[in-house]
Length: 121
Image (cartoon, rainbow, N blue to C red):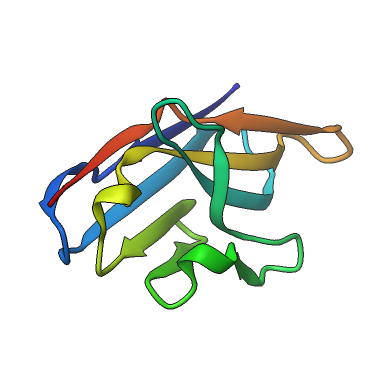
């Protein structure tokens, strides 16, 4: 089994910054891809940024220039640095990982429980 846990959310004023963290633990042979998603009240979950299967960072257009994704492979941790936050960035932010648990196994997908980000105006 794999656990994915996000942290770092909170309340911040508009224009401020937050750094979210995501850690994956458990039976992990490899993390093949991952993504940060968010879901605002009444809206669908959307991709913010992630790492592709080739290890390249990818960003949804809306977040390019403000958000930066990074990773620490040794710690199985991923980060989302969010700058110049706006009230419309208020949402629950989720981490998703595509994991191979043992060599040769099918890929599994795991979500964290989410971390709330609230941006006040």
